Amino acid sequence: MSYFQALKIGSVIAGMVIAGCQTQASRVVEPEWKSRVTDNSFNADVFSVKRKNDDKVGLELDINFVSKSPTHNKSRYQVIWMDDSGHTIDSIISIWRDLSLSAFGKYSVSHTAPSLRVKDYAINLED
Image (tube, rainbow, N blue to C red; front, side, top):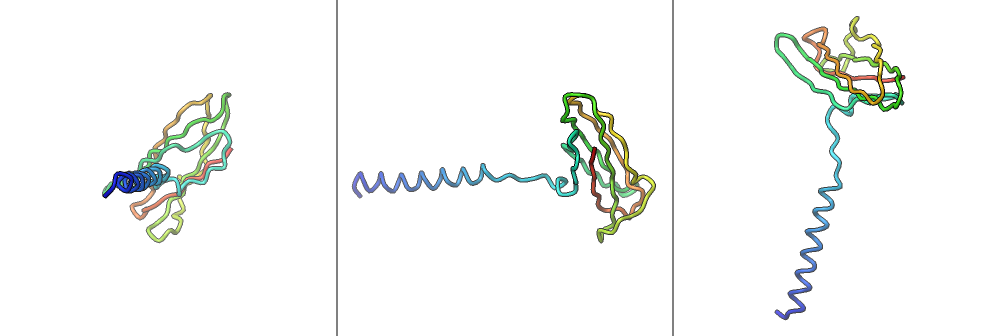
């Protein structure tokens, strides 16, 4: 094998490795909870949801919000509880709740499902 053939093969392999690294780096994997959030708010974002399942208590959610506004604003959110078939479980705790947001502040709220039948959730956020 000549020097130029080895250089050509090395260049091809290096190009494949670099292309593979770029492909891996450019993939954005969304957290599982993102698909459960409907965000119609200009003032706030949901930036994380931690989900805990407890056999005695049921589904528990820790929802973290962040204000996107440089001034004091308000938003509101609602947690919809669902069974394992995706049907809504009506509950008095599925009401809209106000968020009073200071400039670029972070907020955390916790909610426990109203029933052990609850297996899933959705979160709505709006101004």
